[in-house]
Image 1 (cartoon, one colour):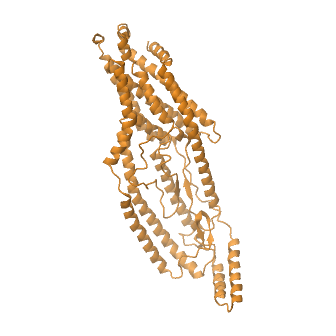
Image 2 (tube, one colour; image 1 turned 90 degrees about the vertical axis):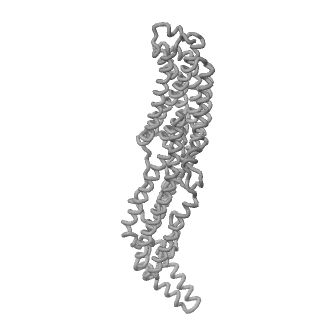
Image 3 (cartoon, helix red, strand yellow; image 1 turned 120 degrees about the horizontal axis):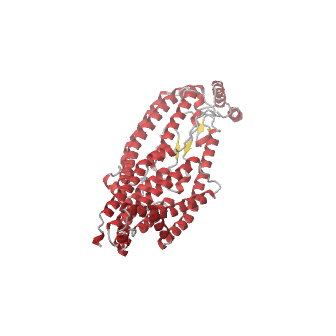
Length: 519
């Protein structure tokens, strides 16, 4: 009997004006949004591939270990078409060096870059705005409409149990709403697959499947909300007004209000305070570096006389005294830089932590809205949430440690001349002789000849060296895991399930308490 009720209601819903308008509107919006979002993804993917290729090309040019300063990049995710999250508000690269510890952006002033009052234009926006309204419009008169027409008395006067009627109505509503949701996902996928550079991986397909399930849970929650209002009141008009009022609260008021409340309850420290802690650390590093330099009189920082990769330079030749002093100074300087990088990172981390806590507070407040819960689920599954960026930066920090340890092992804790120069001990001796010849030249002709001979020596030294190769240099890899995304999304998925159970239970209680004699 439940199925007969559901089938009848489903067929009636399919021919309603509201169903047709809602479905057509969603198809139009998807047809407009998805190509734009797909082109944007393609552009970001091209930039990512170019950056990675340029980075590898620079690595192949490295002559000395000091010049190994690569940048790692976070690959764009095609699932951002479904939910953009904070994808375009946070940096997608990290510089690897002694001085810098990778961390997510913390450069805003009194504004949290991890939060926004304005929704991103993506597929989830269509689902959470248009489909939530459609779900309420489908549900608002399923019970109250029957009461107004007097047919509910006839239905309940027979052998049908009340739970069968309510379950049949719920099933019919879900069957109706599954149709446009499925159409939207299929259409979005077809449009995406029409772009040549877009080839979803197995992980992407799994994420899309989970998004589809999450969307059904969300639509079910909104339908149950409308069903509850419909069982609670006698008039369809009142049920509709309540539903639309709740829709405005959930779509507009709660997301914006939660962001505002979070900024008031947990204000951020000012950038001036952050700089006030960072500048003394920088000054301390400079002071200690000057002391190290002063300990080695023949080393004033070996002259960089050749351009290297990553916008850096290196030393081709230098004197033996400079070579020896540099091999003693660099281990001390690199230790200082590492300590400085870690201390500044801890300073910035405290500020980043305040940003994250403010974002978490806003999300927790917003969870009173099923729409915000659904948005959290979609961004998490699309790996465009804050947690995904934190995971990328965790990988980047681990890679930084790997690179530093690699250089340390190759240069005997930065003391080898290969760290900063291509000059050998023998060439340093020749360098001193030829430099002395320039100084001792008696006239301009001798001086010119000595200089030309000196320059020829430098050029030959430079030409006689090959790059380091660095085939064994650790390479950065970052593969977002759909399993980890699902684990982060589970609390919000559980919240959607809970909202469904709660609202349907309330509807059932209200329907059971309905007295046909009261109408």
